[in-house]
Length: 277
Image (tube, rainbow, N blue to C red):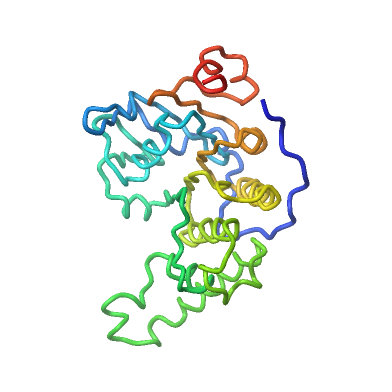
């Protein structure tokens, strides 16, 4: 079993848009109950139930094919479950479209970065912001005086993120010229432009060199400390041990256990299914 990662967290600024969750750390922000999903008769998720506590980073681990990404796709509305119920902040979102779920504050990143290569880093962040009045019909009719204040506020928000994630020097760089780790940072910043209440992270360290990986973990820890709730799929167990509590283990579409990674090491079913294979 890998040991915890070492290294100090980078000193970063605090986002005004992420509210403190003091006093709410034990509350459940998201619950998925008895979720089932199959594809052509092959069961991908088999009665999975998870609870995501507010103000923490919940880890979601398991071997390849365990159903982790499918479950996150279901939670985000990208695909619909065959059965089961998903509630977000007490509201049933099971049948809602993905864009409506995102508008509620449940936002995700992807295993493969989805930035626009021929846009600059700043432009990538700006296009990710929802509810832009300049893109509406009335905005087109009324012109710049109608939407310029919002645009200025979004530019300010984007530049605050660039400062926070140490990417200010790359503001005018085309995204296609960035390294894999820098693209991962852009992916996270794009999600934060939507001011999420819950951020779903699909392997945020994939394709990232170890040094930048530790920086990303530091950024995630700081976001958590600001009160942002996250559910994170990750294969790097040292990273999971560093930032995640609780940790959920899936195998063959089922949830096997939930607890700290240290607790899970002592459960034979988990060892057989995940750590041994």
